Amino acid sequence: MDDQLTFLRDDGEDTPRVAGGGPIPDGEPALLDAYSRAVIGAVDIVGPSVVHIQIEGPAKSGGEAAPRGSGSGVVVSPDGLILTNSHVVHGAANIAVATPEGRPMPARLLGDDPDTDLALIRVIPDVTLPAARLGDSRHLRVGQLVVAIGNPLGFECTVTAGVVSGLGRSLRSRNGRLMDDVIQTDASLNPGNSGGPLVTSVGEVIGINTAIIMGAQGICFAVAANTAQFVLGQLIRHGRVKRSIIGIAGQQVPVARKVARFHELDQASGVRIGGLEPGGPAARAGLMTGDILVKIGERTLAGVDDLVRLLTEEKVGQPTPFTLLRGVEMKNVVVIPAERRPG
Figure 1 (cartoon, rainbow, N blue to C red):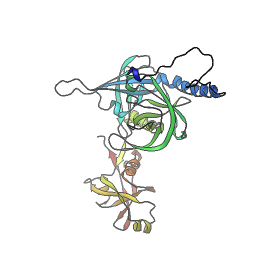
Figure 2: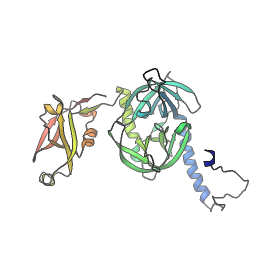
Figure 3: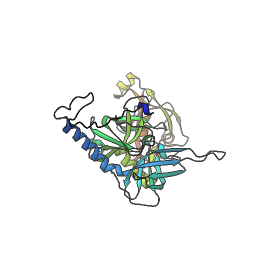
Figure 4: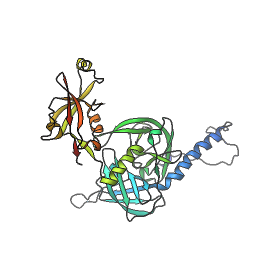
């Protein structure tokens, strides 16, 4: 590995120089200093709140050693609440946390949400830790400077910097659900960065690093802080995120152009019901196999992901209007969603 490393050294020259031996043009030192100050300032604020997480899975049959893994997390409350990725701690038998100073302590899982790949753990016993502040990810701009902090490949307290490459991306979680409002960045992430914070230049956590596209250059993703804030509240109150269901199996299908024009539908697809849970909310409301759902209230249903996203906790037990196509006829039906159980 050493033959792949290039070492830079100070040869004692007083004149600032760039690669290739030329002097730094006038004005560039100040620009580089400003960039450096922004990154250093963000790390100084949030770095003490970033922890290294080690997990042990359940022992395998035959008494074999439990599988091990690691990731990152960020302290979000001084009493030891730590936000990380669901895929880092889900199913762990033992969780251990280490602070940047190397202080080890056990932790327990308070709850996780595979749908958003977020989880909440708490250190044991309760101790006071430096906490980071979650920012408002709605204020992010494409091109904005961001800093990723984590523990990639066992290298603790690693810092990388880049920009926001895209906003409002959608990404599949490990359980197949679509995560919305995902931040794309070119700040380098590697295995072990999972669960660490994505930070602005003013030291606000605006994302939880979650995934990369293997083989691509600089295409990395973080769950937006506003999503994390919502999930955090749900996990504290319930230990899980409460969502609603209507008891159908559905798939995205095209809506015939003539039918869409006739009913003045501004969409090219909907959700066709392929199966109904016996006695479930949809069956009780009179929905039928073959119906194509096109709206919840005034919100368009272009596919199953729209349906999953719009069936929120607030709709549990509440009469909810659906618009559907049955053949060429359009109907309005009121469904009372039930709570979706975990698992």
